[in-house]
Amino acid sequence: MLRLAIQKSGRLSEDSLKLIRECGISFITSSLKLKTESTNFPLEILYLRDDDIPGYVADGVADIGIVGENVLVEEGKQELAIEPLGFSKCRLSLAVPKSAEYNSVDDLEGKNIATSYPNLLQSYLDERGVKANIHTISGSVEIAPSIGLADAICDIVSSGSTLISNGLREVERVFKSQAVLIAHKGLSEEKRAILDKLLFRIHAVQRAQR
Ligand code: ATP
Ligand code: ZN
Image (cartoon, rainbow, N blue to C red; front, side, top):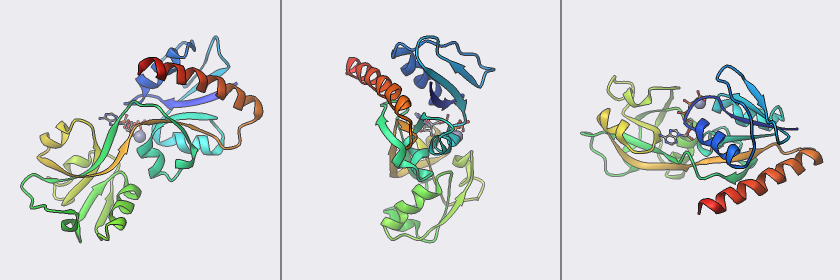
């Protein structure tokens, strides 16, 4: 039996479940349950917070998982990635108040930037030789400039409408993300064989969608 960790509820959940179903794997979901077993494939599904998924897979508590690359790389666990999945596409961007003067990333020197992705932001700024003060907050990052907490933010963007409605302007793209399948490094031969079967089906689903 292979253990798959997916997000319990959020922007990855629906498409993660859809992919598994498209692979011909049946299971019964209930919003109350934290895990479920497939009725026709040796797979058990665990429902977790997305941030916890890379850690569980690294430790082998879950064998495989589906998570956004943004979270995976932020947590420094990119070596677990085995397959890009093509959904939950988004980007991590820097944004400033729409009236603020901004010409290049150098304008962020010495500024306060609020984000939930301090590591991704830090390496972006380091590569460009910019020193800024990064304030890590876990949610509602977009309101930080309007309440005087920060001069800029670095947050997930898909359409950009959230930025606009908070009076912000996207100025730099820091990281491009999509959902990825990740796997524990030390899978047993039996589990590896189940994973190979699953990957075979995922590839067939991906080919059919192209
Ligand atoms: P959890 O409660 O599990 O911690 P969360 O609030 O951290 O959830 P979500 O907002 O559901 O996370 O986003 C999960 C992932 O989906 C993100 O890490 C990112 O990879 C992707 N994502 C986020 N926002 C969008 C978006 N607007 N469009 C597409 N994908 C997105
Ligand atoms: Zn999360």
